[in-house]
Length: 312
Image (cartoon, rainbow, N blue to C red; front, side, top):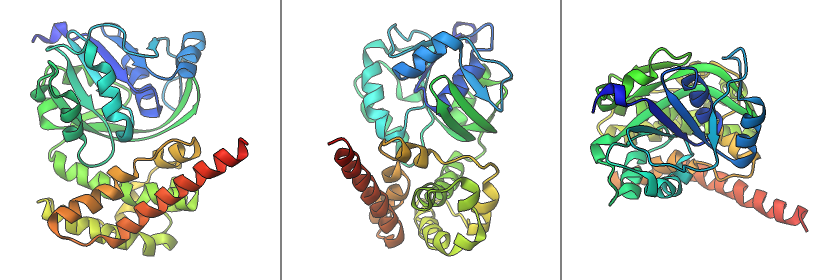
């Protein structure tokens, strides 16, 4: 398909990441951009535009919908919902998918493409048109119609970099580049997330607090299990606590802590839980990551009990 026909992007997931991407894409005059998000966010954007503090000087006017409502012919569908919502989000898009739809997945965790292919089985979307990217941006959802960006960028697998959609994401205020080794990049981000995300919830703190060296004794056993599983998957890594601490370059709060505070399910099963599951496949013990996963689930359950009690 010719590049000139690929002038439409739909961002499915109006959270922090999706909002930033939709805002920067909407500034390209030759590109139709639509953001699909929650009602309050959509209404705020319709009324006053989308504000991206720290990145764009003025509110961005763009199309925002509560659901996909038209065929996705010659469309790049960028899916930015959380991993726990991926299957349901793709199921909702099924009636609008076409053979000319391409899907770009930007979720945290392991097994994302496999989960998407399972949800898309039997649709007209070809597996070779399902791509994976890695988001390395500090972004916080402030309020409906407003997010804050601390900078960063996105890396894509080689297949997407070679596809006609890739140029659409060039020349943006956020960096977009091809990965030299997507599996290594995925595992690197996973291990960083396996430390920063759950510890941010357990400590109820911003990223720079979690990155302090005084917590390194908590980080090292999480990482050691992750190295072992990554090596078994054919991805040798040696990431230590110091690397993770240097990786943190902004003082935003993690997506997991944002989800937890808003009463939404976290992605723990795809991050630390993903390490546990892959470890089980290879016969590698991962008791620390299993314990961390259980702790986050326990906090989620306690939060739910507290919410029910307070509403009585």
